[in-house]
Amino acid sequence: MSDSAAAGPRLSDRQRIHWLRLIRTENVGPATFRDLINRFGSAEIALEMLPELMLSGGARRRPRIPSQAEAEAEIEAAERVGARHVAIGEPDYPPMLRHTEPPPPIVAVKGEAKVFALPGVAVVGARNASLAGIRFARNLAAEIGREGNAIVSGLARGIDTAAHQGGLATGTVAVLAGGLDRPYPPENVGLADEIAAHGGAIISEMPFGWEPRAKDFPRRNRLIAGLSLGLVVVEAADRSGSLISARLAGEMGRLVFAVPGSPLDPRAAGSNRLLKDGATLVTEARDVLDHIAPLSRAPVTQRLVFEEPPDFSATPPPGDNDRAKILEALGPTPTGVDEIIRHTGLHPAQIFMILLELDLAGRLERHAGGMVSLLYSE
Image 1: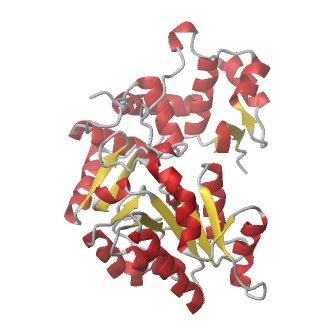
Image 2: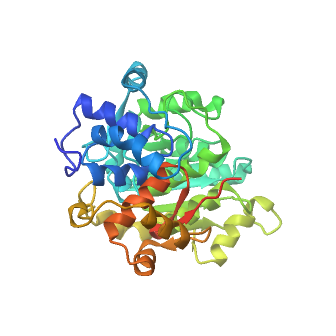
Image 3: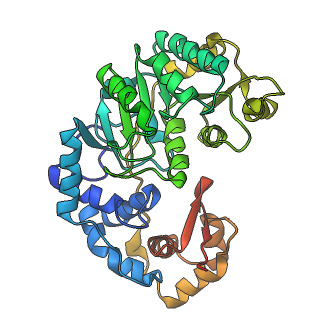
């Protein structure tokens, strides 16, 4: 099958190994992976081109590309715990996740993929939640689940745990910040097993054996938002991870809900601020169900896994002068690619290649809306 096939067929074993090697390579994230497949047509060819691209972008050392044996070992580790790696375009890949920007090209899944076909509602909130907040989140998730929806959360202490418990009987999805074999916190390992055994699923885009770090949780929050039609925040302090999830959900066009709390409780400061900023107020499950019902009835449109790349045959490869123009145009402030095209006068295919080189060299940062900026090393 082609790497750019529409949703349906499965990757061959050879393709899956190459996809896993490519996404596990340093400086290759979902957007870069997509651009490489767009440019070269397959992960296998992209892997061959990586060293040259990174050096052209100014990398100071050759990249470490995972070996075939390492990719095979990760696939075997998944199989040992009853999990599998699912690539975008395959039948078990979550439909809603295809519509994030950019979607993770491959995820590890344990449990029932059928739960991804249900309309997803995320319920997130404080780890140090009050007993009232925990009770509300559990009951809210149970009622939303009984109406035919999947409950999505992050398996954290407090509100996340309550949400999964409430959705356990009807289907819940736990998104991990670490590897699928590293559920966090440790006391929720049993809950993770229950979710997978009761028609739900555990999902992660991180490698097996990966211990979650603080900077991995925003990435997990992005998946929580992406898997859901709407996201409900129950108790969240200012500057909490739940607010990051709410912001990401809003950027993706998902609905954002918040449960009001006492102005005297710092655990409600963030959720109350969401309400001030326009989130939909929730005091009962019906407040959520009525808003997501029209969306859950709408079909999820199919689209090609990857877009058509620019026509590279129409222009020569970029030269050093072209790279200098791009570096001069870029700075720490996010800039749109269209603006770079207008400013430099270079062909879009040349700009595409230079940005890809810079990204692979670890010198480019990508932002929402297709914006890019230059990273400066200290």
